[in-house]
Amino acid sequence: MPVERHALKACQAYAEQLSAGKVGHIEHELWPFGQYTDDSQLMREMLLSFVACEEFDPQDFADRFLRIHQQNGIVGASRASHKVAARLAAGIPWRAAGTPAPYARNGSAMRAAPIGLFFCDAADRLLQAACDQAKITHLDLRSQAGAVAIAGAVALSVQVNIIYPPQFLEQLSGWVRAVDAGIANHLEQLADWIELPVDAALAAIAPLGDPPESLKGWEGISPWIVPSVMWSLYSFLKSPNDYWQTICTAIAGDGDTDTTAAMAGAISGTFLGIEAVPKSVSHFLTDQGKWGYQPLLALADLAFHLTRVRQVREEEGLASRWAAASERLSAKLKEN
Ligand SMILES: [Mg+2]
Image (cartoon, rainbow, N blue to C red):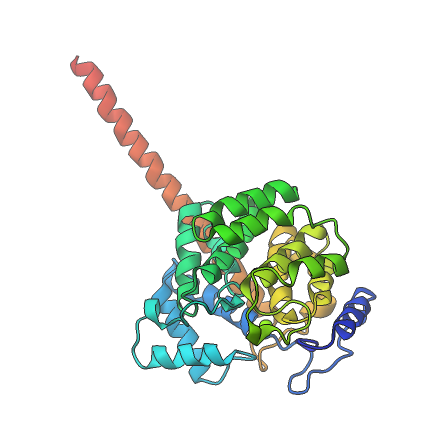
């Protein structure tokens, strides 16, 4: 947050200082170091929703989205986000409240990571849930596809022990293609750019998806869905075994740094585990004096536990259906 939309050089200097272990030396004008923004706040609300419902319920998440806006708790949200909240408050159903196309920004993807955790073993449900939660704010299919890419990257990071960028991107592209072929093609293209240094990658990725005139004033990675999702994946895939380097690469892309770092960090944290997240910074986490490191960790643990419970229940359900089927079969064989 402290360097969102600062000049490119300032972001890159900040990332270098972070890499050198210097934290908290740039203060935001309004907030202390450690205050997180809407991306992480809404990921937390999604985890809370999942824990309360023991499944992903878009209506419950939309209610929580509305509540945090109404309570003035949201930090750094766009004007469009407040307008969505106003439409939800006016009784417009969640499926219709989102900003219509061609508004294809990244608010749909910035909070999608927990979906990848809940449905890490069920691609069809991951797709449905990622698109549903996206629709609450963004009706454009590209915004929904970007959410699938981020949730999908988290799901893959749960499943695999080693990251091979071409295979990783091929799998993501396969899921995303069901929603938007253009973004699926960009994901495949990204495999060729992972080796590029930051400046060359930035030149290739920032203009992707043809950001509209209204975002032309952004230096680096704008909040347009295509470049911000691609930059987050680039940041992760360039250093899959180094959480901190991934965060610094995301910030070095300038522009919508709080969002790219939130998305890249969620993927990297999933892959590497909590031990890879430096305590020297995570202990600063706060949301206006609440929801610091320990309660967030407890919430994430609970959500993961419930995910496992769901998986075990489904495996047991499958096992008992198999047992019943085999009993019927053996009874039939005896009859004959
Ligand atoms: Mg942002």
